[in-house]
Length: 138
Image 1: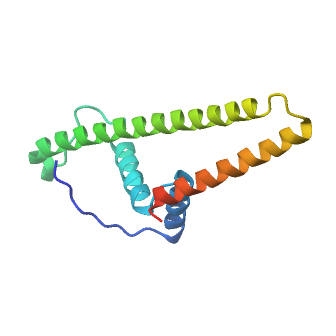
Image 2: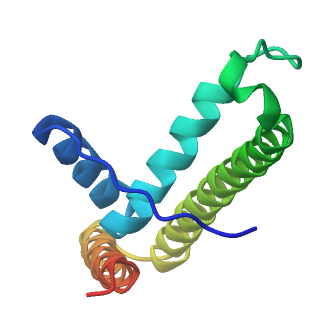
Image 3: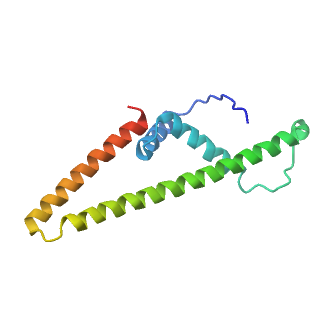
């Protein structure tokens, strides 16, 4: 399906919220904006009846509305899949971190165990920051 370029003006507060979301999600601002638009369109269309009451000027555009609904459904599926992948990735990362702590600490003194935990935490933060920078395109 062909893409259409759209532009919009937002308030300073909305722009700040979008930038904050992008940082938290580890996305470039452009991707976060696309995601916000996808979710916004999905929220607008969600919950409406299958047979909309069309104004007179849009009555001839029922095929376009059907196509729009199909696209919005695909966007909702994509958003759900993205969320599922994110959750699984976070779970896998947490499991790997917990496993590394468990293995590294076997047979170590309490002092050495604390050092190992600090090293693993430092390395984990460094890897996370590096991957976040890559995802942002930095």
